[in-house]
Length: 177
Image (cartoon, rainbow, N blue to C red; front, top):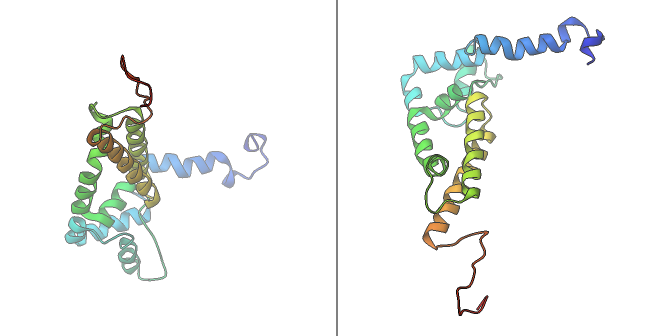
């Protein structure tokens, strides 16, 4: 609204901010300097691509590559950041751990209820958001939702617990006896 009235200078307008943050990233998603440096480090050190540099470890390789250790840069593309930090082995292990929670959304199992599917759906939303932008706390939230879905489903199946469902007495039984 302020921008449409011409109160802001052109270099700070909503149009230029939108073009710089979204349009240029969509057209060239891997042209950001931390992303380019991460891909350069991964191409020069294939073992890092396989096993990863550890959580946040890629920023040290990027700083070393740019000639200074006072820089802390991380890739802004989530999948590049995950491969740099976890490697393909770590990414595979992560997906194996997340699979039971993902399965609750993809396949309708007998022990599932709507809450399990909602938890799994939220895990998928957070995982997709993490793959788009790279904050690791979003990945942690995704893990939390997937694990909650998995544990609720396991508890319901193993102990025949029907959470949020009231048992109804059959003929001849006293209620709540």
